[in-house]
Amino acid sequence: MGSVINIVGCGPGSSDCMTREAVSAVKSSSVVVGSERLLALFPGFDGERVPIGSDMSAALDRIESLCAKGPVAILVSGDPGLFSLSKLVIKRFGRDLCRVIPGISSIQAAFARLALDWTDARIISAHVSDPDESLMSSLAGEPKIAVLLGRSDSTKWVITFLKKYPRDRQIFVCENLTLGDERIREIQAAELLTLAVSPNSLVLLIDRGLLE
Ligand SMILES: C[S@@+](CC[C@H](N)C(=O)[O-])C[C@H]1O[C@@H](n2cnc3c(N)ncnc32)[C@H](O)[C@@H]1O
Image (cartoon, rainbow, N blue to C red; front, side, top):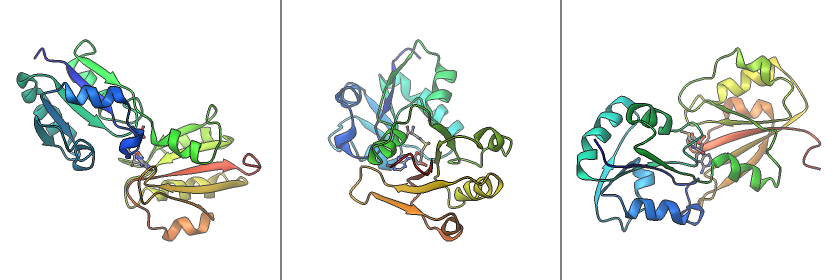
């Protein structure tokens, strides 16, 4: 070990939303590691490209072995500080070796699309698994909640929460933000039961009245 590990926030998906710092961190790396979707954001990268899947422990082992080759760039979606592989990478390799490049989060993009301030938003992830049910009571009175989805049944947690803690909220499903097939829909709670959403999506629960 010894090479720097650049943990690169790639933004919500469009290359227009990637920072110049992200682009140059990748350019200066010998190896780039990430999902196929994120690797595709760097078609001109001429070093080694290493796709990784959802097995995080295998990914960390692979990253360790790649560090011998020079600086490694690990691509994460959005911002590295929000529900990303970054936490595990820093834990395994230490802060001194890791350089974190911030990115535009999907949450930022979603609130920007609604032109709504998100200072007071609560952010929950149902991306890998359902959040703890005990979290629900702490969210009951929150005016703005963002839930990251990602699994076919990620919406189940949202459905249970809305049933348990009814409130006059607007529900927005934000899919593929910043990409060509971006879609933002306001839906009714009942529609969540049968909703087919892209894996690249999140839900915003916003108190009615805040968008007037
Ligand atoms: C592992 S989390 C990473 C979040 C990321 N670090 C961020 O700041 O946006 C992945 C989840 O982010 C959300 N996401 C990422 N990109 C998105 C996009 N372009 N549109 C909607 N949701 C997105 C989805 O909920 C996806 O399942």
